[in-house]
Image (spheres, rainbow, N blue to C red):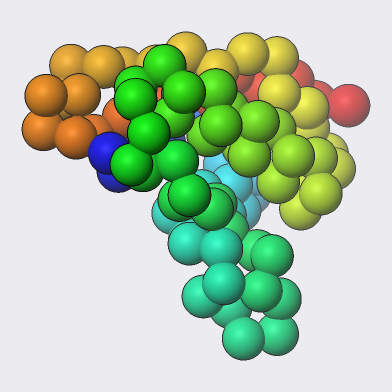
Amino acid sequence: MTLGEAKIQLASSTMEDAEDICECLKVLYSARAGEQGLDRDFGISLDAVDKPTSVAKALLAAEIVRKTKKYEPRVEVVRIEWDTSKVGQGVLIPKVVLRSV
């Protein structure tokens, strides 16, 4: 199971803020934890990739919430929805719904 490119939905006070936040989160969600030399915690851990789909979704959701809170304090996760149309190919695609704080 791999993590597909995350879709991000954000209601923000300004378009510029929303674009900046979305860009920062795309970088965070597409990076693997351990890749960044100066911050090994940055990125999403893929420890869930060999788990059943329901377990992988729960583990990845917890990881997304935790990393969003740590690296992008301007928003909080409201919910995560999953596009499972490619689960047969081993791909889960999260849609992360956020709100400004």
